Image (cartoon, rainbow, N blue to C red; front, side):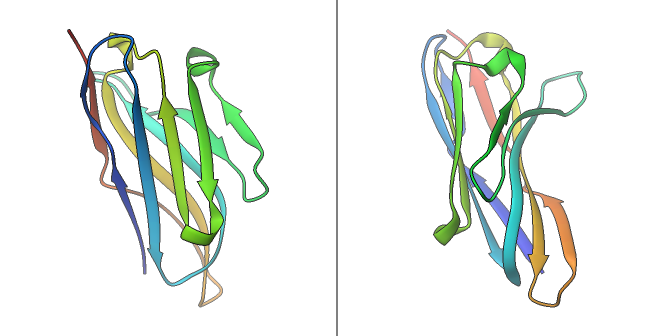
Length: 120
């Protein structure tokens, strides 16, 4: 019904940067909040940042000033610009979206995840 596909992960040195993208497709009427979460090895999945359809953003403390979330509503795409990356940012990053479908139902789901590894 709805699919989320992430891209942009990879291996980067400490202090480097990456830009993640996530595009939603399928039976979409509108998308409310979109967000990025991550799961580090041995830890629970946690929120990184989110953005509403009107552009209101929310960040967790450990990425404030380093990461920027944005979205292109015309493309159903959300981005995560990650600067000044640290080894502790190493994780699988997942996209999440709250979608109103063309059938009038609500869909909330996850992408497949993209690996981000910060290491020298």
